[in-house]
Image (cartoon, rainbow, N blue to C red; front, top):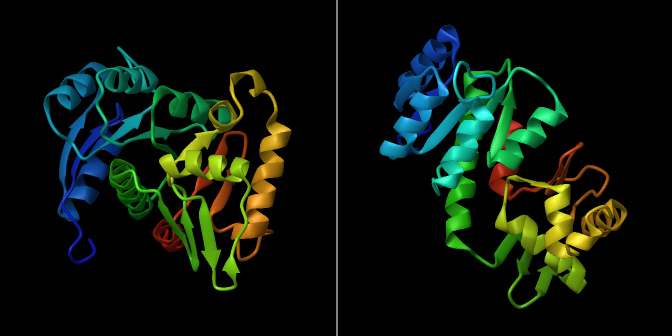
Length: 244
C-alpha cells in the first residue's frame, strides 16, 4: 500500500511487452497513481513532450522505431527534466553505461518487483527535488557538511577535508542519489586531460570513506557502482534501499 501522505504520481510506462505494461499499470493504479502506458518510442516522445509526467519508466529494447536510449536522448535534448528510469532485461554494464550517458537517472534490471520499482521511482523524485533546491548543506548521519564554506563536523568535532575531497563531494552532491559516471567525475574534478586517471579518484574516495563513513569497509553513503562510477546517498535513500 502507498504510505499515508505520499503524493499521487503521474507515471508514463513505455514498454513493448503487453503483459508487463498491464502488470505495471494495475500495480501502480492500485497504489493510487495515474498511469499512461505506451508501446513504442514515438508514442513515448509524443506523450512526454505534451503532458507533465512525474516520472518515466522506459524500456531499453523498444521496436520498431526509436529504442529506449534514443527516446531518452530526445527527451533530454528537449530539456525535459522529468526523472527517467530505464528498464532492461540485460544485466550488462554496457547497457547501464549507455542508458546513463543518454540521460537516464537510474536503471532497473528485469525481473523486478513492483514495490522495488516504486521505491526507486520515489527515490528518483526525491533526488530531482533536492537537485532543484541546489543546497550546499549535506547531512550524512551525524555529520554536517557545508560545501559552500568548506566546513565539516561530527560528534567528535571538526573533520578536515582537503580541497580535492570537497570538489569530489560537490560533484556527487549535485547528483545526490544518482550514479555519477567515473569519467564524468574525473572530468569535473581533475579536468578532461586526466580522464583516464581512475587511480587518483579511487584513492580520494577511499580517503573520504575513512573520514565520513561509520564503517569504511561497508560504505553507507559513498557507494561504488561496479564498472560505472559512484553514488552518494543521503540517509533517506539508505533507508529506502534497506526496505526493498
